[in-house]
Length: 300
Image (cartoon, rainbow, N blue to C red; front, side, top):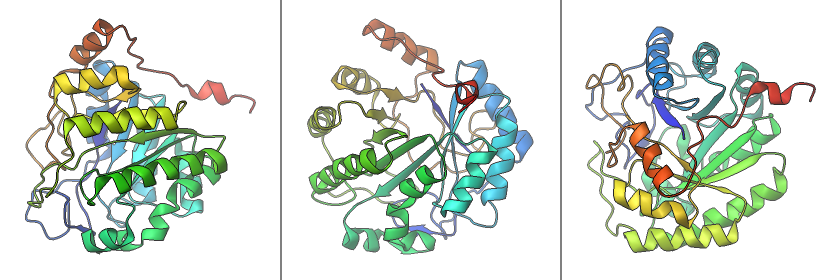
């Protein structure tokens, strides 16, 4: 069980499908350390011990110093902190690891270079190769957990991205064998940008993909977000899903000060964390709120 905690929706990149894209007339907000601690205390009170910190891509407002400061403050609340932010070079990842970052999640968005160029029209994120190499740089810098994924339905046919995602995961299992790896399977959702996929991935197709990934990657985590409907999410768990969020907000400050900023995408499963935990127990699974502590590194 993990929770996303959005620190900012400021962004200097233009991704045509994203609700945070530069130039969109949306309400913007960047949390102070005090505000992020309030969000963190809210999530901790609901059982969470693992948070995923997210921002848009704004090097000045939400750079490495900003992230290090927020991670340092939140370490008092959470033994496990991951980032889903812009990609960095190896030295910058070393600084983030030293600040207390355990995991890095990097969606390639689409693995097709032509589609990637079409959807990423301005900003540093246009560099396909630099983004693709992000997980390996993070691994060399000592980040313990890696997460990768593609926005299913962004590139057509989506199965090309699914195959590329599996190939990327198999590659990382070889070159970053010390790290724990997870793959995410989010379907593209409507956002403030007005984007909607022309050929959405169906429920049946997503279930097929999860089965295929579990066969190809038997020891790799599979992540399911709150983009999906409650009943469908519950039905996917027995197919091999191992990580899930619950009670998510995709707007900065959304847990304690909702409505002050635009969210990144629509959330479909609005159940509270304990409701999702109860659903997992009903399926015969144990909800795990904490599976890591810094003490495990003692003496390493």
